[in-house]
Image (cartoon, rainbow, N blue to C red; front, side, top):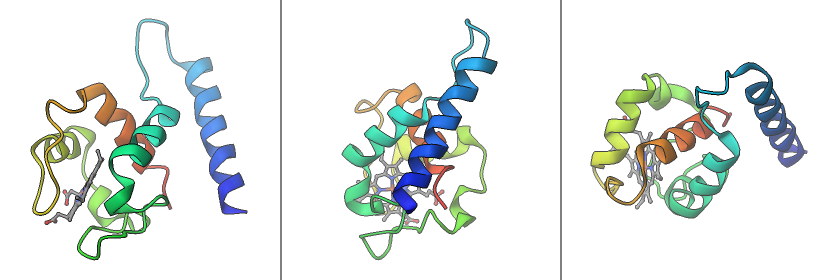
Length: 106
Ligand code: HEC
């Protein structure tokens, strides 16, 4: 099942993060990113990254994610087209968690 695969992938990502990241560095947290995504983004972008809103990009097709994290961060902070800006609503580290989650969608 797709959902089970996602859970397994998140679990693996979390285990890798726990094992490999030095204590003073903070890895993006894909689990938190997923929770924030479902709360703030899924109403347009869809639970699984396939858009509910027709003009929103499909994250399971990667085109819009072929940009470095800081560029995506800046776009989501500022908003784009019909998408509201998230600056002041979510912190940068929250948005980076969400971006890490977006990169797990396929
Ligand atoms: C009100 C609906 C809506 C919500 C809520 C929303 N988005 Fe979007 N998002 C859009 C639309 C529409 C676009 C396409 C904008 C365009 O290209 O004109 C978009 C585009 C994007 C893009 C592609 C940017 C690019 O460079 O083309 C990213 C990444 C993104 N959204 C992330 C998010 C994240 C993360 C959240 C939650 C924090 C979120 N969106 C919440 C509607 C939404």
